[in-house]
Length: 334
Ligand code: G3I
Image 1 (cartoon, rainbow, N blue to C red):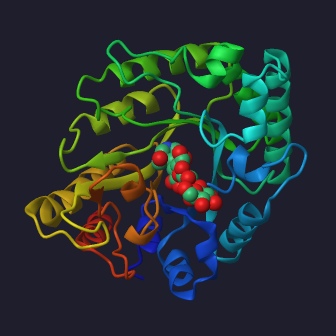
Image 2 (image 1 turned 30 degrees about the vertical axis):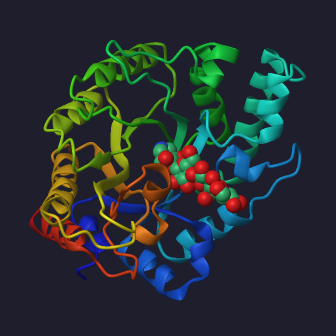
């Protein structure tokens, strides 16, 4: 068929999207999700704050529903994410702040969290984003010393998270995931820092199997022409690579649900999506290309960047946008 997933399958690529699980009950949404995508990422459902809102009391409902949906529809799952500074449970961050959770306890709670979650889905997760967003957006870049985990537990916590995840599910591909690590920052400082760190981790035998470039682009900065080269550089370390959270936000005049008419939205948005896919296709070790949500109604962008939106490949009425057709054509010709 002409679906993104089938066209990608012909060239050995998984084409994916992040999912807002509550939408699985909306038939029109679920139909597009099943027809067009061959790998799904829970946008929020597997984050620590979602699965253990109260200490010791778990809510797996959204995560379970998405994994079951994926299995019914021949899709793989990217687990997201085990070690991140955002969307942690309030009981955890409060406990650290008021001193009732010590650094040692924090590390052992993390270990328990990783074993609980990774074991629950053992054998059913293709790629895990084990660690997410640890590097500074600065030149020079490096691991952020003020990151919640680094400040409390030290940098070794990242390697430990990979070791624990690997022990819990030895067959899952374990990813380090971050943004602006494939040329997007203009200077390549962040990419250089991530590259040096990965090389060091691999030399130490830390079980890292892949690196995910999130791929949050916008029409203001243009497409980062360094992307394919940076992805290839990671791959040359012996890693798989993936685009994990692709979207291209633009600047909308008026309600963010409105279709903008300026040339940036009409041409630059699909162009950058297309260039990003071509960068992924240029790297043989790139195994998946995932959009961070597929329709503008579900996108995180308007709630995060004032006056920006229109970042996905389907409009608010679930109609494919120009970017969809460009990606489809790129896959057809690949
Ligand atoms: O669930 C509550 C709801 O009960 C409440 O009424 C509402 C009011 O604000 O908030 C809801 O929680 C929101 C949650 O998404 C679920 O919709 C949070 O406020 C909101 O902050 C949270 O945003 C998520 C964001 O990560 C948090 O940092 C986005 O949905 C999610 O798409 C986004 O995803 C991240 C990736 O994990 C990592 N890379 C960047 C990417 C985009 O920021």
